[in-house]
Image (cartoon, rainbow, N blue to C red; front, side, top):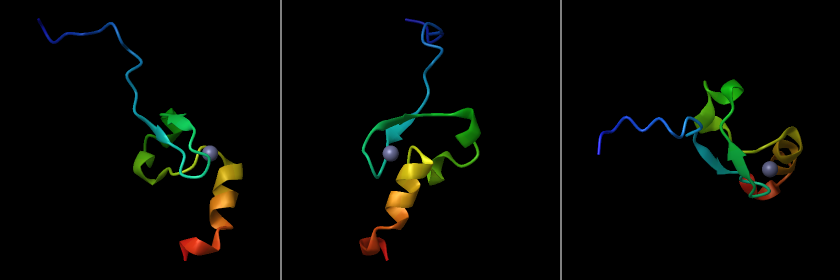
Length: 55
Ligand SMILES: [Zn+2]
C-alpha cells in the first residue's frame, strides 16, 4: 500500500483536558503551544489554578 493516505485530512492531535477530562481537539490557535495546553477552556483553567494540591 502506498503511503499517500489523503482520505483523512482531519488527522489532528488531541488530548484530554486535565481538569474535566474532555477530549480537546487541536486548534490552530494552539499550534504554537500545543504542549503547554492543559485545559479545554478558561473555566477549566481557573479550576485548575484554584486547586491547592498543585503547589
Ligand atoms: Zn476542560
